Image 1 (cartoon, rainbow, N blue to C red):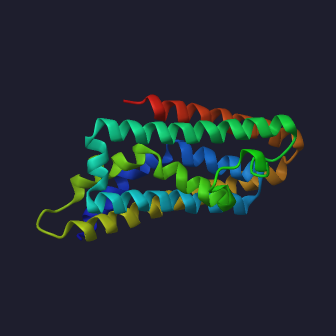
Image 2 (cartoon, rainbow, N blue to C red):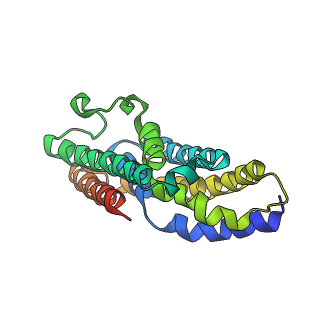
Image 3 (tube, rainbow, N blue to C red):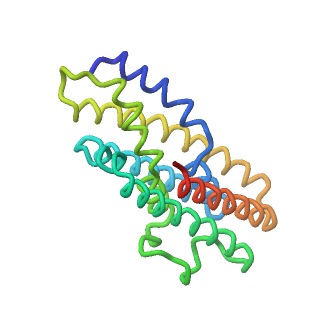
Length: 208
């Protein structure tokens, strides 16, 4: 694949990446509630979620989902419900004086994966992530070449941009947490992250 197309794609996704979204909020929550390592795991999970959408796009599954109103609605509802659950869990845990990821009662089947599993599921169930590979990626594909390798190249570029940004933000939050790490600060930041996750979940579920 021609490198100018890859660079052009990276330039296009950078502004989208810098806009705070689900992955940004989740990484923040993981660092505040846990540690820098938890944020790093959430970042890698989010990136792996993007790669899942890239794989779907390569075999045409994303196009099938996005072209079907019923399938798209189901994906939106699942993603929205998951984010609302995650946000409510974070909020409730601060009221009980416990960390968001330690309460067994509220764990989902993939909760043992911790930040990685949450980051992965958040992006896999996010139709906005799938839409990147159906609206933006096709503009940088050449019909004269095999589609799958081109999507793979662009997916790696996309994942690299997202990972660099999320890791940078993880270290920024971890440094700030070290300087102002108090129970009250962690409690209110976790509540804020929980509220934002619920908001993103509702937006995901009702978005057209």
